[in-house]
Image (cartoon, rainbow, N blue to C red; front, side):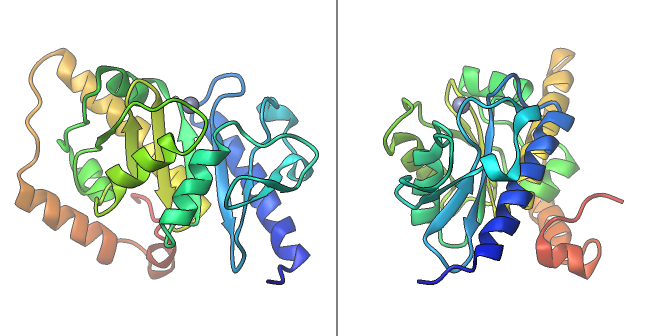
Length: 233
Ligand SMILES: [Zn+2]
């Protein structure tokens, strides 16, 4: 299979630039968190290097691996979460971007092992359901990837709270997976704040369905819908 070098170079630049969004939205601390993207038409992915500070990331420092997580091109070692990303790409052909963070509010729900109830319209729009909890899994090998795929297969939510760990999101593009990570933390915070002063009632299923359908199929600009990256405006 031939991969145009300019394609890989473009994805290196995109994945590098998207990491700045994790910092901008307050989703990551020190070197935690990572983004990957699938290389179209190839059994390859581009992912953050392990242990490099966000401000030191460059397109050249991104690591290219095959879908078994073996380095194909890169100066640095790939993220220690590469096995999980690679497993998701092998199992879910429609996924082209994966994001992992320990964003604090969402990870607090993960620490309790509690799904975030779909209780506000913005959450119905983006997630179409509760944000589910995945199993506890130790890093290394395929256990985290298996947990992500088992939880999100057939689920509307592009985000999973891996128990006692943090958030993984998937998307048709790396950018849409980043958007899901940002929105996951936003709704985790809002529902948490609501809980502080009283019980939170989930939305009725028919209302969730209507909101999700409208947002995914009718709302916003066509181009944004095509990219599944539209926002509220
Ligand atoms: Zn982690």
